[in-house]
Length: 269
Image (tube, rainbow, N blue to C red; front, side):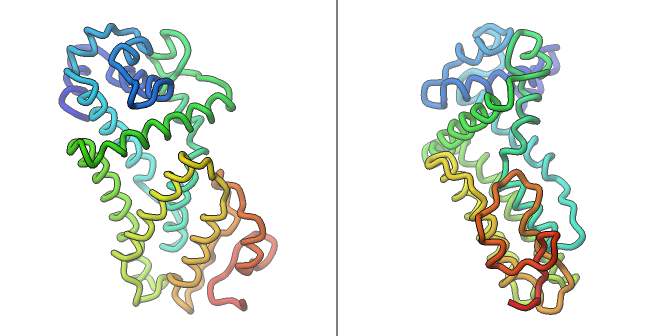
């Protein structure tokens, strides 16, 4: 958290409530039209109270981006899996299929009534929550678009990119060591590819409304054909419980063994 957020906690106010109000205001108004008054209207605090902790909208949004970074890295802080390939697929699923996180995000931010805003309890129904999530992703994309012009925003966004690349690099290096990922795979190249893939998918989701699972299936094909070591006894989950829609017949085309929807590396194509 930033110093401003820490000072808010020190004097007895609730920084989480301010972050929740910022989230709701961004969903409602977007970045360009957002004002400090809009954020105050979504909380039990006055505009003057917000300005006591944050001089400008940009300063508050920097604290909000910091808050998002903490929440993001905590959510994916530990990636479970039987092996490095499984961990890599799980990690990318968490990045490509964020819709399943809507309920959690909504319950944390709250929405209706003073008590909900303060405590982050109960929110709207599932349909409203999905719409709210898309609105927030749109607002976040607007903030990302300011990166070339606002250095402080760019630095925050670079932190997320560095985290994603670092996690992929670490997983791939582990896979090479354990023999599940081909020894000639470059962890840095793979990390750059995954980061670019995730950015592209999330941008298209917001700009064009594309949310099907075809990119996920293509990514799994890439993992299977380019990363998995030839003799590795691992499986690539083609139809996981991820919140992404399946990409049509892509799973069948990739070669699925058995009834569990798992394609084994090194099998017959």
